[in-house]
Length: 124
Image (cartoon, rainbow, N blue to C red; front, top):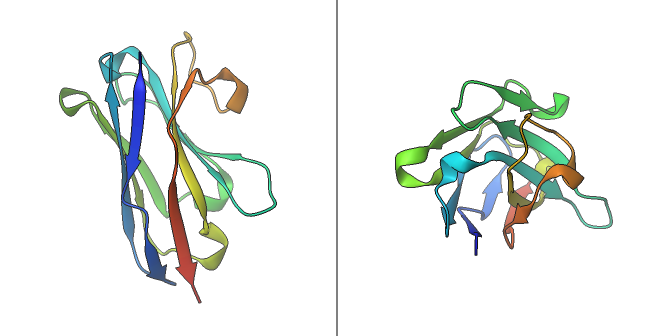
């Protein structure tokens, strides 16, 4: 059974930085492409970033390009999301997800396993 556990979410001020972590257990993280998604109150869950199994390919939603960086340490079975220059509109529950398919995807439905989420709140 694959489990994803997110951590690192908290209340921060506008302009501050935060690093989220997602630890994979049950199977080695290198088995999966990994992604971060987020869901703000009364909004649909949306794609934020994804990284390939070997870390060489990354994709980001336009609204976070230049501010967020996804990375992974397969030796630690952990994926990270470094978030800089945070804005109030980044406030959401952030979810980590794992995708076992061949190609790197940005689509929510392509991801097979999900964590429980971690709350990020950015105050103005």
